[in-house]
Image (cartoon, rainbow over the protein chains, first blue to last red):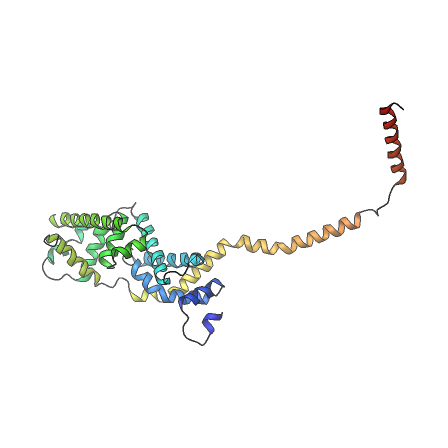
Length: 189
Length: 102
């Protein structure tokens, strides 16, 4: 119970990890509390609804719990958790890619025509993008979401996904090209 | 690339989408409790064999002790049967005599 009952300042991640590995479940609760916002913000860009968001985030922290022994401490814990989150999202995208997106893009693309000049409401923009992104391949969805919505650098994406920087650039280029084509096609109809 | 109107349109779309809250903040309340419940239920599913194995260790220890005591108690006292030894010696002497022709 050591870490959570001590009166001193909030323990750092390193001490938290040590406490969890020695069997302190309260320390793991604190770890989840500390990193859940980050995991939710990453996963929310890749899931379709609240239930899937909760499932993916739970899966992330279960993996963190099961693999904490492998954490070497050479990078901040947040980076390590983010990497697990990105991999869990990629797995979810790949599972989903076998199924067709039920809502046709044409049903939401009207907003793109209506707001072609003035600023588009953010919610509409997100809905259009979400449906257009669903038509891309999982690796393209992953790279363009991290690059353009999460505003990560190519280097950061490479570190999170384990892909080379060259591969990230190529996939980002293809994804953007494909996304433009999807939006143009839906706009033209 | 900057001159492509579709690129500009896409960039504006991304910029607008970034402003949305990616998730509703109330979703994260009580999340740690749900995670811990799931971890515990997962562990409960994965560990019944281990728990069962730990529980039967005293049974095995008791069984081994019982067998040791039983074997010790049922063994006859160690006695040398001198007639049997003498018989073996006789057999060896006969065999030697037969083989050597004496």
